[in-house]
Amino acid sequence: MATGTEPSPPAPATGVHSTSRAAIPARHLRTDRWWLAPAGTAAGLFAFIVYSTWRAFANADYYHAPYVSPFYSPCLAENCHTMRGGPNWEIFGSWWGLSPALLILIFPLGFRLTCYYYRKAYYRGFWASPPACAVAEPHKKYTGETRFPLILQNIHRYFFYFALLVAGVLTYDTVLTFRDEHYAWGHMGLGTLVFLANIVLIWAYTLSCHSCRHIVGGRLRHFSKHPVRYRLWGWVGKLNERHMLLAWSSLISVAVADFYVFLLASGAIVDPRFF
Image 1 (cartoon, rainbow, N blue to C red):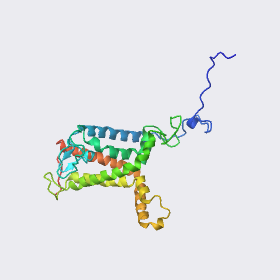
Image 2: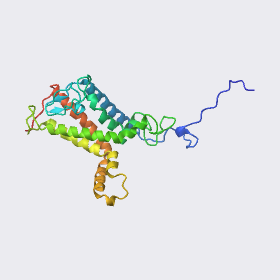
Image 3: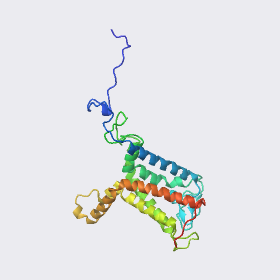
């Protein structure tokens, strides 16, 4: 006779422990230090998040003629330092009282957050989904990017167009670095080289994007009928093979460019001039 106190049956196992999967009691069978890669990824991304958050909310030391921090360009509010010949577009007027960096960083940040490589990086580094190959994830079930909020990753292709605009503005900023502090042309300092390296990496990372590869050569039935697009598709494909390296290199270079401007603007160093 049932008394109502019997223990309820255990819930059916899900995920990698479901009855349809191989019954392996060990969490994994790997003997290498598989955790080093996700731990290093998490540490690197966390360091950049901390640094960029500090610089974005600082609202100071982001302009030292002729250099402007890539975190603050273009400037879309009136509370920016006046940059002679620079990207001062006072679209938001005087009502914006916060750091102007918050108006522009959403676009490169959105592009990187939805990037295919960065998805893999922070999925593994922060969410352990999964932390490494052949290592079970701790989640009971997997829904991928079919539900909110991860379904928003599909807007990556649209952030790509904004990333092109930002890269174009940063290219303009790099051209302006061939001026001196009095805005006279024909000069080059160490900051010019820093900005040149940064913009090359920014463009390489942006053009190596999977969305760019699809836009250039996707949805074609016959490459032979589109030789120009096929050639471009091949070039983008070569860059795409190094997408991970370019993602990290450009992330580091943009932080270095910002920090160099910070050192100049704060008076910590003087920009060495070559001519």
